[in-house]
Every structure is written in C-alpha cells, then in structure tokens.
Image (tube, rainbow, N blue to C red; front, side, top):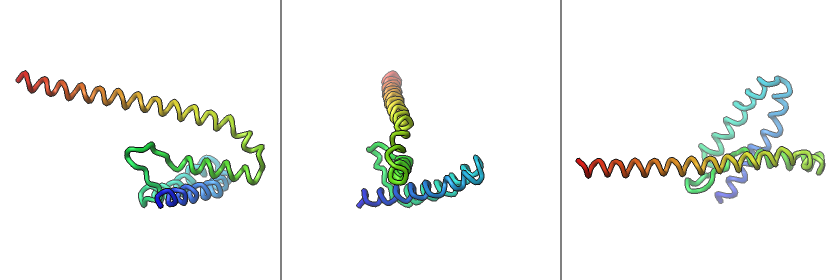
Length: 132
C-alpha cells in the first residue's frame, strides 16, 4: 500500500506541474515560475511529505518529487510528440545522471568524514576522562 500511495503522490505532482507550470510561467515569465513554485510545489510537498503519501524511511535513499515530475514530463511528451522528444531529452537526462552520481559520491564522502570526526571526538572525550 505504501508503494501505491507513493505512485499516486508522484502522479498527482507530475500531472499538475506539467499541466499548470508552463501556462503560468509562459504568461508571467520568471515571476510566473516563482508563483508556480509556491502555488504548485508547496501544496504538493505538503500533501506528499507532510500528510504522508510518499514515505521516505530513514534507512533508505531519499527520492523526492522531482523524479516523479521528470517521469511524468518525459512520458507525456513521448506520448504527445513522439519518440523524438525522448531522443532530444537524452543529453539533459545524461547530465542529470552525472550530477546525481557526483552528488551521491560527495554526500557519501562528507558523511564518512563526519562519522570519522565524530568517533575521534568521542575517543578524545574518553581520553580526557581517563587522565582526570
């Protein structure tokens, strides 16, 4: 049931973003994009994360609404425009994959360094208590 709730949450966010964001941003430009972010992403985040349609266990990797929105946009264009839209999106998708990989590696290195410093601080604290 958790998976089904997540799929519903991702689908709703993807469909609303893909159908409304472009219209608002097209009419009002950059300010329209900011307005759309508040009017669309804010309530979708509240529904998906705060209310709990999308659950992210603490011991699992975190997947946010952007993946659902990206899949909705890619499949929408694939079915409306054709396979040429998917081919045109490949360079962007490739760069997103590279960026996500680099971000994951950096996050793992930072987490490893923080754990090392935390264990060193605990050892120093134990050492200070022994000398006192």
